[in-house]
Length: 266
Image 1 (tube, one colour):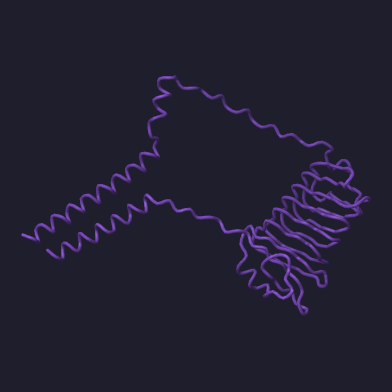
Image 2 (cartoon, rainbow, N blue to C red):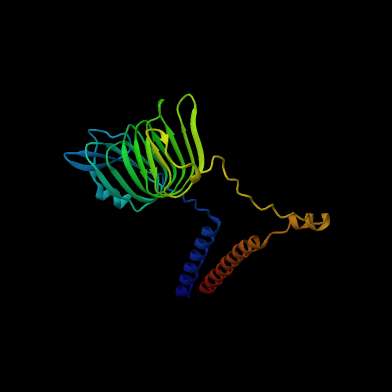
């Protein structure tokens, strides 16, 4: 009987553990994006976690960045003393060419690209938002959803896009110089701030995409509708069944344990 009592005890413990798991909500938070800053050290590209680059901080080979990088991380290129051809197999949230010369980055896609401080670079991969400032030179070799050109007057950025562009805006602190839409593939060319694309290859007004009207909502009768509000839906019943089932199982196991204890005493 002692052996039977041990078996019942183990079963009761397992039952209670699974019941606790069912009533416990585990919140898993997404990892925060990591910023990797790249700079040349002793003739070699190195990476450092965080921004800005800390001269006396720890830096490592790019190999370790590739091992750790995940979707949503950020990349900053902060050195124009050496060219760079970099392939990243993750979709990044930001790529910033803070200070870059002849940098080419291959990526499955990126949310935001910033080309600053007269940098020169190219992005291979679809871009959601591209921002090119001052006299920077940027090539986007895939599609760009929104492209913004900004600088002091007169504008001096040079940009080309091999894919399509949905929206382009060029402006300085005083006014907007041009704003156009729906550029055909491999048509957008901006040289020294001036748009060189043929007028026939883009639209001067945004294209409004018609959306279907929502289906009419049929309001249930008052008597049926009010009553249904208080009735648990299918998913609620499934949850209750699980909880009651586990509670019942724990009750049965507990009674078995008590019965085994009573037999042992007799």
